[in-house]
Amino acid sequence: MSMRHSFGTVTAAAVFVVFAAAGTSFAQQPTPTPALDRRGLPLPFGVQPYYMPDVPLGTGPYKAIMSEEKGLARQIVYYPKDLARLGGKKLPILLWANGSCLYAGNRYRQFLTEIASHGYLVVAGGPMGDKELEVGPQQNPAVRGGGPGAAAAQPPSPARGGAGAAAAGPQTPARGGVDAGTAPVAGRVTAEIMKEGLDWAFARNADSSSPLYGKVDTQHVVMMGHSCGGAVAIEVATTDPRVTALGVWASGFGLIGRGNNDPGVAQKVRGPVLVISGTEALDIAYGSAKRTFDELNNNPVFYAWRDDMAHIGTFGAANGGELGRLAVNWLEWQTRGDQNAAKWFKGSGCTLCKDPAWHVQKKKIDKSS
Image (cartoon, rainbow, N blue to C red):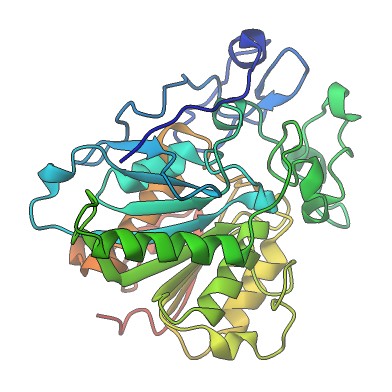
């Protein structure tokens, strides 16, 4: 596989100089008083170290890299660096669409590398962007209509006009959108881009000259997305029969995107569905996530929201934080039938069911295999 490095420049001070140290473990929730970069933009998970794309990372048994691939100009791919270590194990496919539909496949590097390190082929929408997108600021939108968490959801940002600067939320992808908190990125991730990435994965699996030849599990394709990317995920999952499962993170029906206001969209979703959001006071998409659970009646659906979790989740924390672990367990259950992983979600005593910070609702999950 080929590897190219095409990062934009970033001022070291913008990433490494902070005004305050983060007070909580960045493996969990963002600190309510985040470190700030030199422009006053929040670094809610502290200062993350930066690594070159070909450095193997992740806590899984197959340390993973981030790669630009020949013939794949609008996507970034994550996969185990040492494919030989897989033995006969195949790589299920995860397609990922960014929050804000941000056109930068390295934006969710922490989260996606962690997943890939457990033996997955991850295709993220968007080319390689500035490395600050990986380790720089992240910012929440103000919750529509205000509410008790609105101020906390949008930390003050002098460089962006204060707490109300991102109030427009998901409708402003050209500015970086609801969870970017960085300079604008041209373009946006679309369903077309994600399907193009899936075509590539299938083709590499069938190409005897490819290192991925015969190593991809084309029977298990999971489409996931965050915020605006969740709308893209729904569109792909309802229009491409190769998709076998759907994951919607702080997003859902009626948020934004084509097809998501279609009253019949719930009937078009195939396979099991994971719906995760933050708390109502801190997550602009709380209502869309809940609506998605309410309207899905033909699928196994696991829906949960977490106390004190804001719209940005923990994707930017080391290894994706709490959401990274949740995603890996969901994928291990849905693509490999791992019953230990299933315990996170199945039964009245499921891992998340017993955690007082999580609020869980389910449909047909406990009867799933």
